[in-house]
Image 1: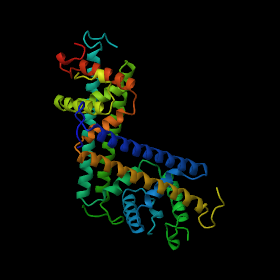
Image 2: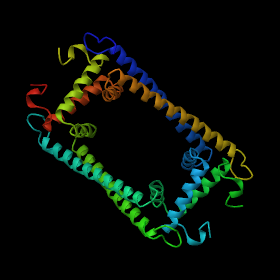
Image 3: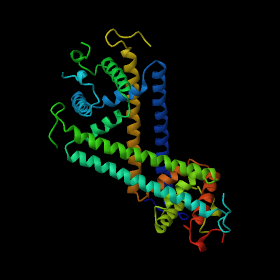
Image 4: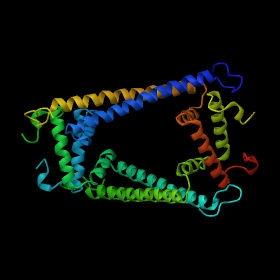
Length: 92
Length: 92
Length: 92
Length: 92
């Protein structure tokens, strides 16, 4: 730590700099969060389904093999739980 | 409010009863959360994929028509974004 | 795993039991969450400040020594950052 | 919507641009989140208590009058619940 201030016994300058750096970054993060909301609102206004957009953006973080493996297991589980009509099963 | 206590100026008994009711409920909620984690751990030990189980449990909250509509739009968006190999397209 | 079902290749019964146990527990957890909200609403109707109630409930999870230590450091930091008027400083 | 593509029936270009804008913003947001973590780690390495720093940063979002009002009510509630030793009560 820098030399502590006489009154608070803390290096106030150093504390202030850390606090203000964090506050600036948090402000930037909040404003980007608002920008993201705006783009979704714009997409919605253009007729896109934002809930599905979020799903697609989530899926794009995975490579195709990972997606396909998850789909296969999901399909298996949904069949096992009777959530998929028998005749519509993809591998029939 | 009940008649306030002389010292704190607040109906301490009433405040305490609300606080303790909330604490008991929060304790119950935490313990059920732990139970849920245990069941997932048990399922995992039995070879099930808990990430996919969570997905299935989420899907079971929607009726089939809703699920199928979402799948259709998702498929449409994934095609539009080239995330699905052309020949594997379901309607080919 | 139990012996897998012929059709899904999965022990569907076992999967269903895990899924249904989790669903029942999640339902219980949701209903307790609603009960907690109700108690806060009741307290609010009785004139209590629910934001401060939440703070008190959080503080009650810590013992007095821990609370007092945190208060001391917090006070130190607030002084160092000029957030406390000098004359009102508690140790003057 | 722009004119839909022949194959997907969707304005793929428009969807892609919304998705990619969101992905870029989310990337920026994640990286700023990492920067914030770094500053806290730096502050910790300099001997500061990061939990209390977070509290101070939260308090700095409120003006002094709001902080003092909350402190007064909190003190009242803690007294009413016997969380503050009687002799240490501020107005004794």
